Length: 484
Image 1 (cartoon, rainbow, N blue to C red):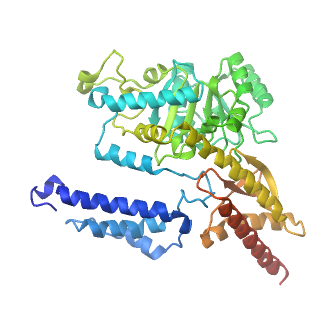
Image 2: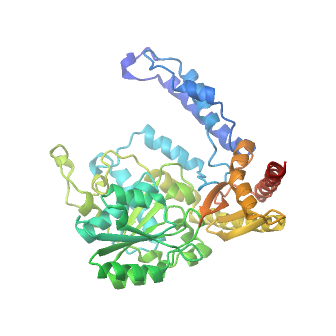
Image 3: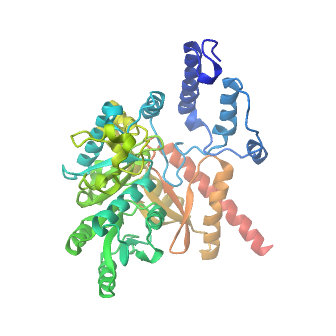
């Protein structure tokens, strides 16, 4: 530690800070440059991981180099690389280095982006970035929003606003509607907002795993006849399971006629509106009352970077504004925007900086091309799977996602399900690439999300060859177990 300041100041000298900073940059650059050459997943040393929990609370400090080495060894080396070009599980989180540095700047300057007077520049940047997103999604000039941690918080925030604006906080007898493909963040958010499970009606999805407007119309009519209060429809702009996009334009027509709030969970899929193919799939997204977005997914930001957009920006302070004597000096009725009134957080970080910097440094065209790469990679993956001859495509590539299952030579469905289910574990053990599994109407399927723009055709070819080889090994082993 520096001799110029007492230990309790928690400070370093300028020379020491530069040394620490250079070390961090070296670690990050080495990782970014070598990422594709590393395995997607490391074999876990459970003994070493358990040792972390036995470390006592330190009374005295230790050299920072040793702490950084421990972080590298215990955290980095044991983590799956969700930004790896051969990580196809869940929704891959491919960030960019400019945004990584933006996060470092926001943290280093410790910018408090809740009260306009404490950070007017940061507040203006967030307002501008929100407005850029408003324009991208075709929302009216009266629309606005706020940055939050991610899709879960964005959905929760939007549904809290819907509850306030449409129900004035009175949830008795109220009902919201979605398909059985909705993300669990929505049902969890509804529960946290005080709704009982039966107040969220999950309707069976159609053949394309989309919300059926015919079933929705019938459910709303039945509930009204029973004296209930339908108030909200929750649609998906790209489901996590299959990439399906609910019929947004048709849903907007229905909601307008029935005076229902239309919320769209666009956590990963909404940014596809920047592409020609995505814009066709997302037609009607400009008509929503609220939209949840995860910029750390298909806008290539580091975790955390969620956004919630509302058709009328006044709805946010109407829902969340509370006053306090200690903050009386920063309350204003002018044009200044205090983000502490726009959501549940008072103390909030400057999340908008990284997306603003990305837009500025790369430009919208480059970001759009990166999204197009996801569509193209998923389509290529589907062609490669079909060419292998032992895979059945369950849902074709859409919004960079496709699902499939193994098809053994004897067409044994039980064997197909077992191989498909067990393949996930074999991939994880191998470490070269990783794709996840899911369930579609009780059927085990494999799932690939190909939205990482750094994924190459060679990555896809080698991954699918690996899956085919591992699946064949599993089939042979299972057949041996059956007939031995």
